Amino acid sequence: MSATPTTEDRVWTVFAHLSALSLGIGILLPVVGWSDQRRKSNYATFQCLQALGYQSVGFSVWVLSYLVVIVLGAIILLATNAAPQSPGVIVFFLLVFGLFAVYLILPIIAAVACALGKDFRYPIMGDRLARYLAYGPHKASEETVWLHEEHEIRWVAAMGHFSILILLWGMLAPLTMWILQRKQSPFLRFQSMQAFAYQGVVTILVLVGGFISVFGLALFPLMLFSGVSFTFDSPTSILGWIVFMVLQLIAILILLLVPLLHILGQWAGYLVLKGENYRYLLIGKWIEKRLSRHFAVEEKSA
Image (cartoon, rainbow, N blue to C red):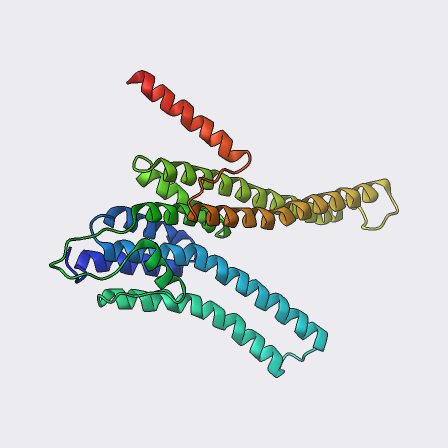
């Protein structure tokens, strides 16, 4: 392997970093790039793993920072009764749009640097990941020393869990890992299947909670068109209000549960990154049994 990145290396790394601009759906590209380039190019492998981390861990940090800024800013503005054109409101919107711009600008800078063959590192994460993977430049005359394989697998598997904050599209990360690398690593096969199933359950809960809430709100126009008043002067209107309140309560309980499930997914990613073969309470055991049965059938047929 040459110390200078090849054209193929640069193409993979540019696409891997730029895929962050899709805000979710592009997360499969770093996984595909890593799977294709590992044991071919340390440079491309590291950049793809770095891009994957930016779109999972980095996205999680960015979303949480965004929520903190919006919630605290809104509370401060409401408490001070700030006018729409006051300096406080202007600063608030600058922070909101500034955070959004920072998230999009960094991958563009990374893509340009990689297109020029530079060894780009994201702030904070880049150097830490390089040490974790034992990645460093070497001369063309030296024998190639590949990245730390076990840590590679841990990092990729952990990102499959961390991507849970990317609603719906986050499932593409563990699914792509399972499709491309299920025969190479039992650890990654189990963790990617588990992360995909867990994210699927959480996504279904979000959709169900949203549907119940919307369906409850739809009762009002239905009552209006059927000639029922919104007051409590008839059994039908009282029943409508009761159904509405029950549906909204169920939706609120479901949507309050979802952040806790997101935290559990982040915790799973952290433990996997540390090397633990983490199992979700129910899903993990179910998948483990299915894998055991699958391999038992394969052994008998062989």
